[in-house]
Length: 356
Image (cartoon, rainbow, N blue to C red; front, side, top):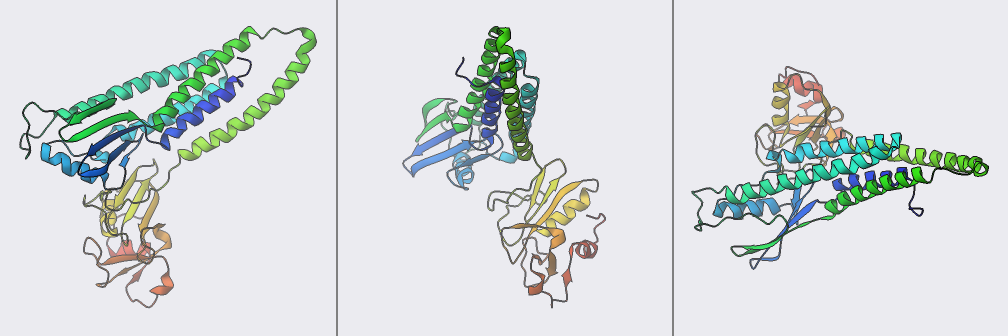
């Protein structure tokens, strides 16, 4: 126990490990078949589903259609929305544990994470069970008595696919967070047992502890700032070909158009064109937006604040929903066009009922 750092340092390492679940997938499912050299990899994150490429879900959904399995739509999976909130809450609670520096708090935090982790794995099992058993009776391919539940942990054959399911780096960091926090608890207990020192050594020890705690406090402030920055309200880049419009539900495909709303609570809504975002805002009269963004025609694929843009309605711009509406970042390129609008005049032109 002597070689371990202080309980606070160990707890800070636990917080950093827990925060890493946003950087790495928690789980991975591998599907190998002769028609897919190299196989298909499905990655389950704390807040999304991805894979070997951006078309992985599309390919898997096409295959599943033939055997009657449901399509995977991340937007319809509630766990991907509230699991990040749970992690943010645990990070905040962990900062409180560091501040109060009590043995019971160091023990409570990893126990809580362990219980929530067990519940999360059970929820994942139920999702796999429903996904593999709830089949469409009108599917083109039906095998009597066959179910297609992927393994929770391990490997199995499903028709012509060899399916493997194992934890990924995110799960390893989650386990590491529990280990660091439990070590912090053991270190705190050890300190309590070894806390009685001779009077002649007390002043020297007190000065040493004071310097160490000052350093720990500075480190805690830095970590807290990083954690709070990770919880900020920020826009998300549009994943063309994968994301769908919040208004018309069509796939967002053209990188010269598109728009995005981010509410004051951090909820993100993506649109395939301005002519979808504008009526959506009109319907949500009481909504409070932290960001109102659109893609510029002259800088494709990049979102910009609408109040820094100019807009043109012209037949030479074939926008996705037929409004012939395009946004521009560089106004000097289009300053001679008679149908030039800024954001406020565009809303007025389209008879919006609300202001920005």
